[in-house]
Length: 493
Image (tube, rainbow, N blue to C red; front, side):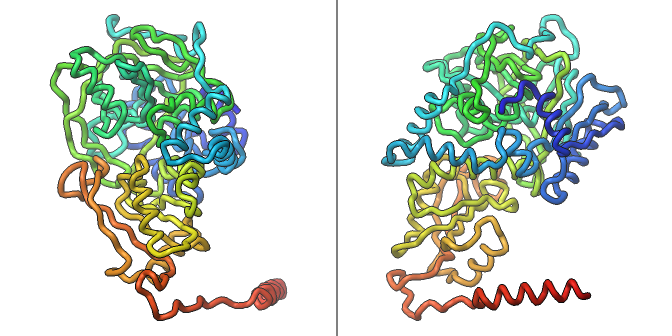
């Protein structure tokens, strides 16, 4: 189903018992983030939180409520994308790419792109949108970004940050659109620092404009259908428009209207739209520190300056936010959803792949667990090398491979087999490659080492000739009888 606004999504959360309304005043500096941090670490991700009376550090109220932890559970993720379970979307993606067996991962993505077109997911243009009910222009002055209850999440953060922005840019040569989720630090009423890592498509667009000496038009959408923000986080390759993917998810094309101050299109259903330009010739600005999803502060670094030219919003807008830090937090559920949805694409290129998981403790790129149907020696290493070459998987520091019967979503089970089946010298490989810009552990920024650990049963062709032992398991009959005996004992107690 498609949601017409963030308010529409909030009403659904409320009806389904997935929302806590916070009626007491709460400060945007630390208090809201601290509450979200505690709630996200509750069983199964806790509840979504709607802070109806956010206030600034002096106690002055904002006009807009704050929604946080909206994506913070498996159930809410499925609801956000209009399904009962995320596996339904995985099945739809699988059907799109199975029409013709692809020769490689690139061809699989091409098939997905064509399939999305066939599903009428391409964005459409409309005359007007609720996102422009109210218009504020920089030339008229005013509080600008100060009107929005932007959060400061951690004590040493450099300031308040937009944490769920849909950053919209276009390639100056091809006009191809990209939507990325790049955090933005508020520097003043009409200025922000734009954090995009050098590997990101938005950064590539910015580099082209900088080389041309032209200001880059940009828009930042906040809110709207929750599928839009999720699509901005999805690990889509070049050539697949994130809003086209959002249209596929919501089974309704995303509607667009022209921005009021920049030559760019913006989603009509957004709660807020911040329009502006990225400075092409000015000095880069300090951005950070920022308490990141790694659980550590990202230090101050130089990033582009964004100058807002207009801010538009709905009459009854809701500001969406998230907080990242030591797991588990809301971002774990966003990452897990991407894995489930895009697993069919990976399986098309790696037929031995059974399942894949990003454990919460690995905070996305640090650790990946994979299970495979092993048929020949060193197949686990073959799979690892293939995954390191698949898009953002290039950042993965550790891949642990296990046999097909192992549940990769059970970290304890994976660690058991890693300890039981792995001989360190024989079963570990190390390679050099790109690293996440946020990884503080690497000696040099943006490059480091990766390790693969083969925790599968070993074959003679891998140098193992001792005869692999059989695992201890009882019979099915004994297990059933044991269950009956225990149940009867508990009834009579």
